[in-house]
Length: 307
Ligand SMILES: [Zn+2]
Image (cartoon, rainbow, N blue to C red; front, side, top):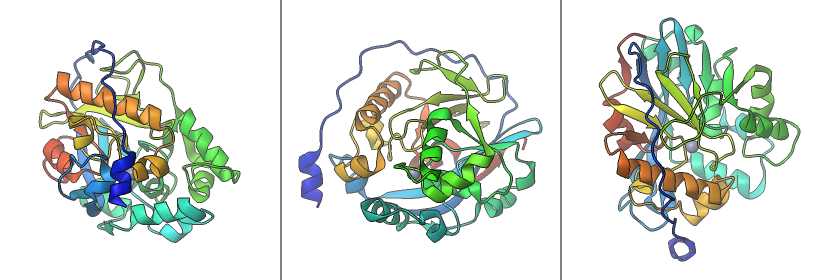
């Protein structure tokens, strides 16, 4: 299998040069918590195509609580506690891929448990955001009753398709349960870093959401400054491990074929992240499942500053 994966791997061209748009300095006062739902191991041959990751990579299903005053959002929630219910109605190779994607992870805490362990009352959440609609990011948010879930309209369209039984990277159960409490994220803001439009989450410049369309049409990046001084960009599954943007490596054939909605779009985002990493080496680009990147950006699980 690995030989096949290697043989099918392609190269990602260098992106056309473009100038980075500097975000306005954040006002300060952002509270940040790293909450972890599951740990596991990501196989090096699955994460990137050409083997730049030389060993298996410690992996995670994690979320981030971002707080300004008494407004509080959870970004990503891991998978649902009841995976069988989450995967109901998914068949064939797609079902096999989802089960394979879930297999390496061991649950650490439900979202509610992880939030409470960090000192955050789940009932205090203003809302939740999924970096995209896949089960291992959206599912756990659906286990938090009544919390509004914010996603770009492109991702909500996939949820509608899933709920109606159509082809979708969102599971039918997740689509059905998301829609009644879904909120569309607009991209009303100006360009940020390498992206042309953004959403200012709190309206005061401390958290900017950008579209990373490719892995799924409504995939998001989340930019902010951690109270520890690190500038952070959460990139969901635009890349699976940091070697993707360090070495400009595509994902493996298997991951790209079954995991990405648009491989050309995904490659373009990887190229943009590679250029951003080259031009802004101090920025912590955090792939959702690369635990090494989480540790580098956040230090340890738990909260920093006001929550
Ligand atoms: Zn994922």
